[in-house]
Image (cartoon, rainbow, N blue to C red):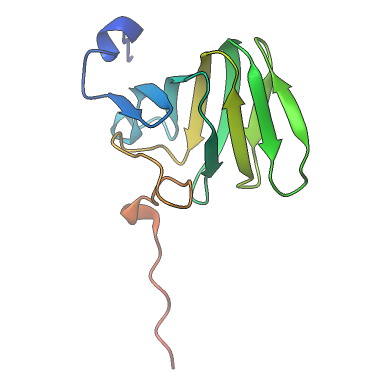
Length: 137
């Protein structure tokens, strides 16, 4: 059984902060659950362009409001408490928090803990999961 306290986690190196967000990573790859679980705050006034090419993510909004834009369709959805969105197709998107937004997030495959978004808006792939191309005949 794994038991962790959010307040305690926020005081450790499992609390990762970057431009526009802070994420308390309560479960990571090393915990062996097959997914990672984060409580993430998206800061008001930021514009977070993301594209998780190597992960699937589901997000539940607990507090705050804003919007998420699907960059493939241009569709904009309101974010508010109780709204869940799932990036089930590695969807390119922009989150625009109007207030600080508190979320609970799940990533598959799990993150290792130190990831921040790269220039494409993605977290890097876990090297253990990257397959080498087959040798040419």
